[in-house]
Length: 69
Image (cartoon, rainbow, N blue to C red):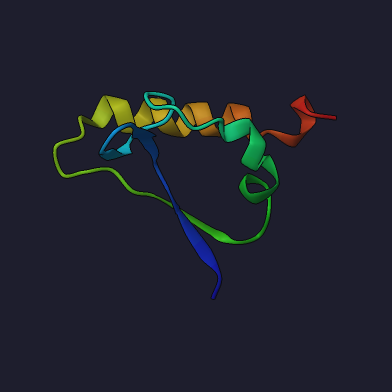
């Protein structure tokens, strides 16, 4: 099994931030977002549900291959 966990970061030391609330350019990783590998959103236990929902919608939009062709 091949997979990756997905979260954003806010320097200097905050990780597991929900996209797009950090500094990662997720468009650069579009090929991973559309591949057959397992992708898991990895929030902290304190992440509000609405931020997770927003992150999923953001990633679907940014990694939608029809938007990049």
